[in-house]
Image 1: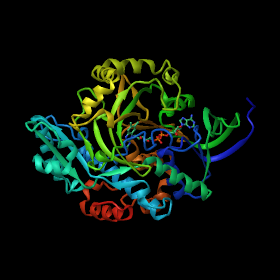
Image 2: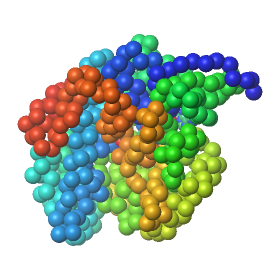
Image 3: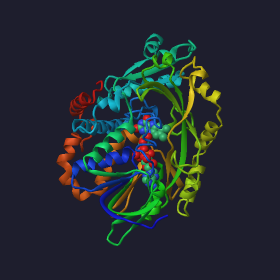
Image 4: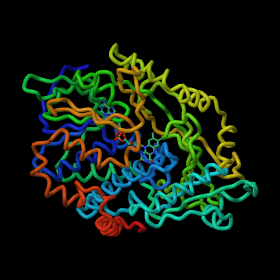
Length: 496
Ligand SMILES: Cc1cc2nc3c(=O)[nH]c(=O)nc-3n(C[C@H](O)[C@H](O)[C@H](O)COP(=O)(O)OP(=O)(O)OC[C@H]3O[C@@H](n4cnc5c(N)ncnc54)[C@H](O)[C@@H]3O)c2cc1C
């Protein structure tokens, strides 16, 4: 391999061409058009990992249908705070996306977002009682207006014909329905943003460029060691600020940066699989995203759901995800990823998390052992008349669950996303996987606040154009929330 050849300076260097880097890049380019922004991607195309439409479920997570966002309180009531928080984040995302549409970053909103009603569906007396209570609690919250509940078979059969057909008539079932739900192609959104930024000269995109090394110079700039896999050349680039938006690759790069804040983090890869159906007789009968109740011990992201999707213009049904195990941190990664991520600082965290999450371990072992027919049996809880010939197994994206060092428990498993930033604000990494892409704008704004505190006052007027409710708790401002949502949905052509 050739020796280092070039030195190029960037104000901001983004690593990874998924929805996160695209969002951070688009916001920064809007806030300060003079910034020299670079982006390095190891694959030869953008959004090829978790952000790709086939690798995630495309749910605009907003608390409408995900039952794990509304746990039961110690007093037996429903805690709506997490659902509301996710909804607020999603409203922020939609506002920024509407801004990007208005600015012409995306030709048409239906290129990446469309209305698809969100349902929760439950079976059995206990879960029906839970769903009824959940609906009553959310119906009082302004952001969730219009959600409907039904346990009447005839109505449910109208809403979800495929799921009621052939169902045991003695089984107690119920569902909630919200027209505010969305289905999103995050890969297409990332692609549109990056293409626009590159063609307008505001970002330099280098595909087939894998970041291997990071070292900080005395002047606090970062020296990034990159391999250009097409020309088999090693480059060194310099940047004042680095964002590791490398998805499953972020943990390893964070460790290589050597910043003290990286210490103690570990990651557990969880792969996923879908059952996919393209039979028009079935796809024509289901226009919904339907979330059920997760199994005991299942991580939140393994909640089973049945989604109607539109992929490359082709209607599909997607059911899953079924958890799997792989030692890779990226779908296109290496089987050595897990071993390479282990350091003396984090190995205890990993062991501790394993010991403290035995139900999760049992759940994962059970999932991995399932055959195709076992999975069809799980699908029949949603579609009683499901036939194996209509369905194929597809590999979903890879997630890396974060484990954080904890003095009491050794290691604590985190299911959310976490920004880890250097004390001097010159580098930040995004770890974790959920609720992920739907909250990408809030994550990006948090990152800007963390890493560019001295610029925030000057950026505030522009931020208010991008996200008109920036800095406001929308749940506490029903009139503003309703007004802003109506305007946003108008631009994005979504149902209200
Ligand atoms: C099965 C599944 C279902 C999901 N469902 C949903 C959902 O319904 N709704 C939702 O909002 N979110 C969902 N998510 C989460 C969502 O997909 C992710 O949060 C989001 O796509 C992450 O975007 P990202 O840009 O951080 O990572 P990615 O899209 O993975 O992009 C990271 C990029 O970095 C590149 N890279 C890695 N290492 C390097 C390196 N060393 N040098 C250069 N480039 C590098 C990779 O090739 C990749 O292109 C789901 C995820 C999975 C796996």
